[in-house]
Length: 132
Image 1 (cartoon, rainbow, N blue to C red):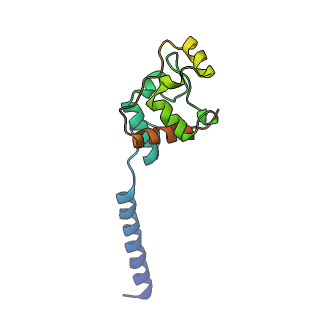
Image 2 (image 1 turned 90 degrees about the horizontal axis):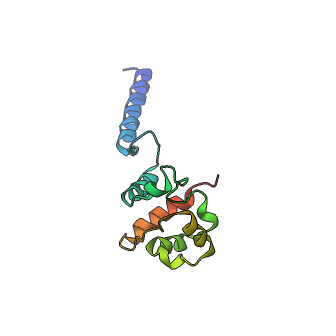
Image 3 (image 1 turned 45 degrees about the vertical axis):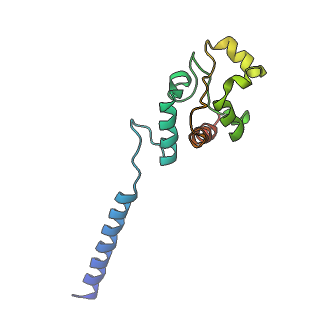
């Protein structure tokens, strides 16, 4: 075997190893045509389980049932948002929520039974949404 053949063989072996490694480590994309990272997929799955999209819309831009969640980081810290998700009625006297009561028929449900880590993932995802 010549040196050129050895180099070609080595290149092919490295290429095949890298291809296999890529296939092994590739994260599955979530359903539909949306490309979520694994972190986002986990948060989106949690939000689907809690039915967030039913009121806030598939892109969280709001519906007649619930306000937009896009760009809310200007109003919320991570801890405050987690506390709100646990007990939304404790924020009912806030002026912003007084407006929401007039606009929306139902108030945000409580997620006190949801694990804090799950609420943290949801809060992180929501806070990462860019303002429009």
